[in-house]
Image (cartoon, rainbow, N blue to C red):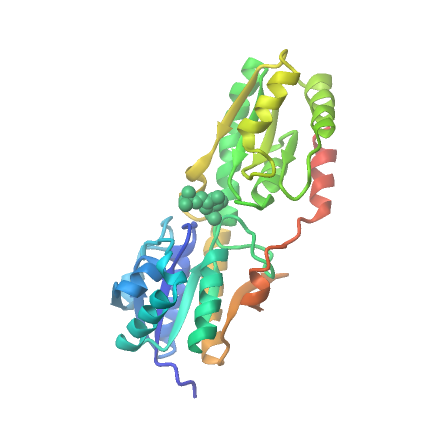
Length: 326
Ligand code: F6P
């Protein structure tokens, strides 16, 4: 018999479509297993200040289809300090919470890992981020929705790019990871993707412009991953404008619209499966693990591995884009 009687649930860091589906699943699975549930608002920040309420099954009705997070989210600097962590621990004790489910990305899981180790407190994580940059899981909750949003936007931009014979550089999110950019480029039929994982030398860019844009096409779309390494869409476009003044260049930065919207079926299913497994994991005395999905099986990924920051890009995808865009 597990000693856990009450779990707390929070979302932290950047929101991602499917977080609500995860909250719903964790809550209902906990209740199904006879546990009490407390919803913690505004991530670790709300934990420190005690924004904590009882959650019943009806608290999570009618949310599976909603983007954002009903628990709200925040990035907490205070939780990085010893005082902040101690206050968070005291609140957990005060509210009778004996295990935590943290939903978020890299920063959320880093915080969870440190806290769990320092206070010997059971925490499991769910990978909620559009960036797909957590190691040990094929995909993260929110990634598929963001990818579909990107494709819809690029389809629209292509209409105007074609009408005007223009070269568009479209910037997508991902922080320091190029998953959204690369797969967004493949799915939208873009000519190229510039991603931080692959250094794009000046002459490579030139080659791409010459062969892709000049030779056979009179309009082109290049997806650029946001990052200091790529220089972002504005940086790349400036270079191209200087070197190829004959081209009619435009930039579009998709920004936070990539984070919103109703989650796709895939994200809802992923979040629901992971939520149920998170409770199973806690009841099975697992701690310091993130739920991951590999080959359609849910797996436990130690926090230390998940946040390693070196999730590789599949090189096959680079060839896929190159060949399909000739
Ligand atoms: O991690 C998710 C993400 O959307 C990144 O892709 C992006 O770099 C960042 O968050 C933006 O953060 P904020 O919403 O704080 O501007």
